[in-house]
Image 1 (tube, rainbow, N blue to C red):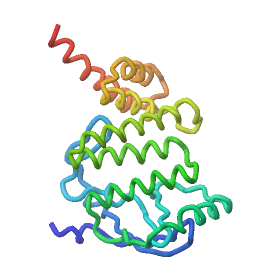
Image 2 (spheres, rainbow, N blue to C red; image 1 turned 60 degrees about the vertical axis):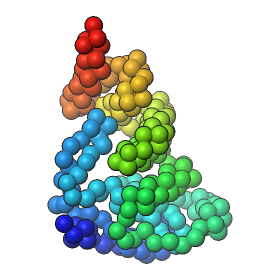
Image 3 (cartoon, rainbow, N blue to C red; image 1 turned 180 degrees about the vertical axis):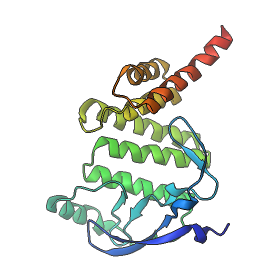
Length: 223
């Protein structure tokens, strides 16, 4: 496989500085997952689309995920220009990305999302995807670090954000992240929340049951 055969160029207008740049994206036909883990980390047969999830403006450094719509008012724009652009060294993220460049793009996106005071669920999602990249690289220490950050932001959203919806996804992820961090009591609590909530989508209720069963198996074997 030639990597450039599954990538295409997308033109982006930076929502902060209006600079127009080109970035790589992965053709949808090339996104073929081999396996998916409990926290939705996937391995891919050809190319990992997460490498190209983040749009990074080479001119001002503003970085964000396609599916989010950054809320940038005039005050935040001017503050970003004063605090960040004055220190930003122009660089190009528009070519084929290494895993290290993908990580950098996510760290920039986490910074920008917090700078622009984006919802906690948005920052949590970015931290989770960054943890996936560290898992792919085999760096367990940094993976755990960003899983913990993701959990903190998701829990904040769970407690304070009325827009997260009642489909059970965020609640399930909180349980799964607790499970991965060996916090079993908390994991069971949140899995139960998903299972018992009639508004939870069946797929999340099933995942919660599956992961709860996964936790119980070692106990049953030792018993």
